[in-house]
Amino acid sequence: QLQLVESGGGLVQPGGSLRLSCAVSGFTLDYPNIGWFRQAPGKEREGVSCISRVGNAAFYADSVKDRFTLSRDNVKNTVYLRMDNLKPEDTAVYYCAADWGPSPHCTLLLNNGHYQSWGQGTRVTVSS
Image (cartoon, rainbow, N blue to C red; front, side, top):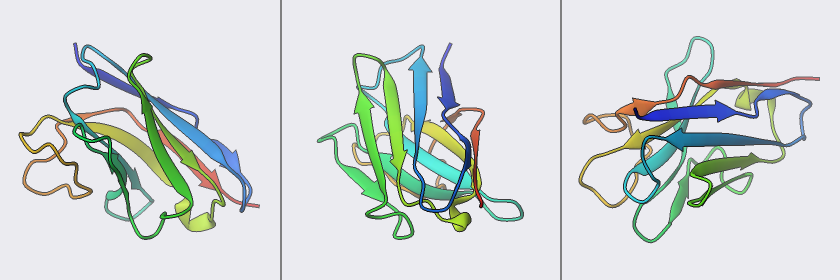
């Protein structure tokens, strides 16, 4: 059974840091592209960061570039999203997802059927 489980969310003050984890089971991280997405109240889900299965390249949305860092541990079957210098606008539910499509390169887009397997999400609140 394919499963993705996020953890690490919580309440943090502006300027603080959090590290989100996405533990996967039922598959290894060798094949799918993995993405982190977030959805704020009243807004559409948006791509935050993703890592390609080929070349281990990570990509970031402009809004989080230079503040967020994505990494993965293939031994632990876990993907991490380190978030620094958090801002109130980062408040959202964060989801990790696996894209089983044929492209070796990840995308932050959700159109064209990308990202078929999803975790349940972890809530991040940035507030003083």
